[in-house]
Amino acid sequence: MCGFDSHLAYVMNRFLDLAAKQAARSGCRYLVGAVVTKSGRVLISSCNRYRNSPGIDFQHATFHAEEMALRRARHVRGAVIHVARINAAGEPRMARPCQRCATALVARGIIRAHYTTPDGPAVVNLT
Image 1 (cartoon, one colour):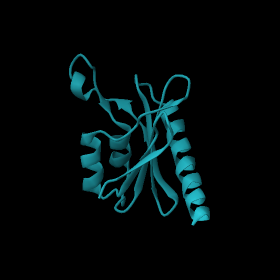
Image 2 (cartoon, helix red, strand yellow):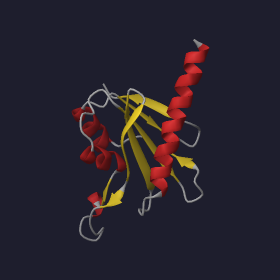
Image 3 (spheres, helix red, strand yellow):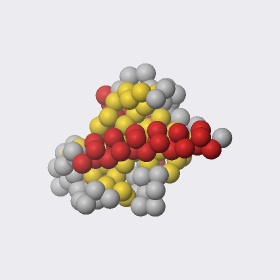
């Protein structure tokens, strides 16, 4: 059982590292990236992006990384999303999907979200 747990942790960290690389590409105030995987394969990855001027619509000024990934992905039912948020120094920060994103993920059939926290990776089951 220990070997399985360590392999799972390795896979989760690998995909969270990819999500962190996506986050580094973001031009937004908060650097967030997402990677959608299924059966150990990357289906799509994206970072958060500006949608419009914050002066026009402050509440929805960006597409969250999860939203961007879902907009570009097909056949994600049963998939897992990995979400990473980093600060300017590249250190992990809390990236748990917000309620709006969690609702969208469930609607598309994403079963689990792995995300970064300052204390290490965390998981939330979406089903």
